[in-house]
Length: 315
Image: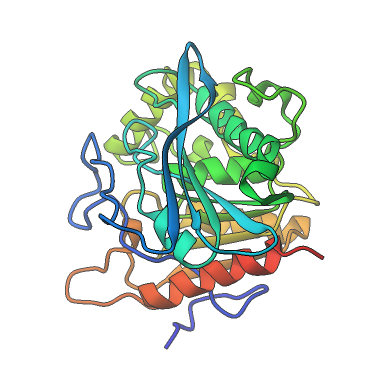
C-alpha cells in the first residue's frame, strides 16, 4: 500500500523506480559512476548510440535514443538527465530502455560535467538538448509541442531548472539551434536540490558543500548571486509546467526539505504538481537497513509513466 505520507495534488500515485547511484550507507557517492549496461538485445525497440546534439564549448555533445520499433502517429517524448553530483555519471543510462518499453520516445542527453565547465554550462547543455529534440521532432516522429524531462539528484535539479528558468536568456547558451524554444511541458524531479542558498558550508554536509563549490567554482560566500542563479526554487512562477516531485523521507545527501520548500512554492504559484514522500527512502530511494520503501519501485515506475502520458498527450 502507498504510504499516507504521500501527498497527492493531482494524480493518484507517482514517484520513482529503481535505486539511484548513491549507496544508502554513506552520504558521499563514488566520484565516477560507470555507464549503465544496456540489455544485449532490445526486441521491439530501436536503440541509437552517440547521436550528436550540438556543442558544449568546443566539443560535441551526444545523446542515446531508444523508442518502440512499431508505432503509429507520433510518440510522446521524454528526455532523461542523469545524476552524479554534476561531476560524474553518464548519458549511457538504462532509463531510456525502460521508457521505450513503456511506449515513449526517450533520449538521454550528455551535459558538461563540473570538472570540465562551471555553472551555467550544465543548464545550457540541457536546454540545448531540448532544442535539438524539438528541431528534429519530425525525424523522430515526436510531437514538438509536448516534451517532458525526467532527472534524478543532480539531474533532478537540472530538470527543475528547465521547468522554471524558461525566461533566463543567459541560460540558453550557444551550442546549437538558436531561436528554437527550450520550453518543456512536464517535469519529473526526483530528489534534486532546489535551493543552493540553504546548502552552504554552514548548513550542508561536507560532501555536498564540496560538490557545489566544484559546480560553481567558488564558495557561496564569495559569490552568493551565482549560487542563487542555480536555484530553481527562486524562479517558480505561475504558468510553469506540471511537475512531479519525489523524495525519500530519510535522504542523507539531499535533505527532504529541498523538495518540501519546492512543493510549497509550486502550490503558492498555482503550478499543477504532485509531491510524493517515499517512506524509508534514502538518496536514490534505497531503503534504510531492515526496511522496505513505500511506494514500491514498480508502483513508482508505472505512476511516473502515467504522469507523462497524462501531461504530454495531444489535446
